[in-house]
Length: 203
Ligand code: GRF
Image (cartoon, rainbow, N blue to C red; front, side):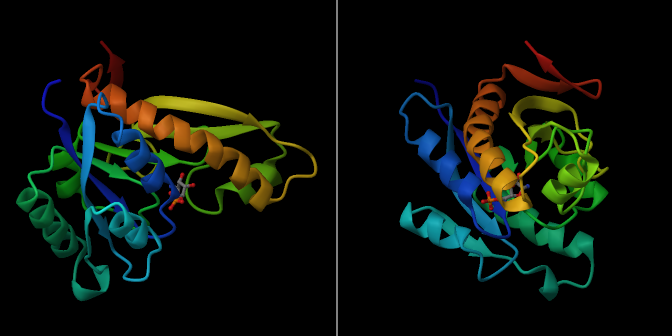
């Protein structure tokens, strides 16, 4: 098969989506490979996920930089050094500078645990429960400067039950996230979905 697309995953925590992406990449026919994991948090569990899979992983703490731009420059330098072509954000809890987002536009994906454009931001499952909606889910989208607002590549839905807590809903959504993110990465790595005129276009 043709050369795999060199992909980096940015994390801040648990890394269950990272694990799902790594698992998908083990398939010899998968079009992408995870070659670098960057965390902004030194204690992120996802760093052990990367280490166990023998993937190069490093911490770049936002606390070491005076500005968002400086932090993003350090990330960008690490990405360049590893010859990265695609970025997957998976629970990465920092907002990027516009300059970084523009540079990576069309080549940076994020996963969010709701059916965007509903329920952006944080404490998403609590927002969903508070709103009383009956369906939630997850979204993989291209990253644009405005938070959780980029063109949608793929979505999956789950039911919301009256007895749900944020934890039970999160568990149900995560099962779908772990299938959706590899599927979306595949589409982008194969060039079957591209960002064009502000939309994710299926070719
Ligand atoms: C996921 O729910 C993802 O949608 C959101 O952050 C969470 C990260 O979980 N952006 P994990 O670190 O991948 O387990």
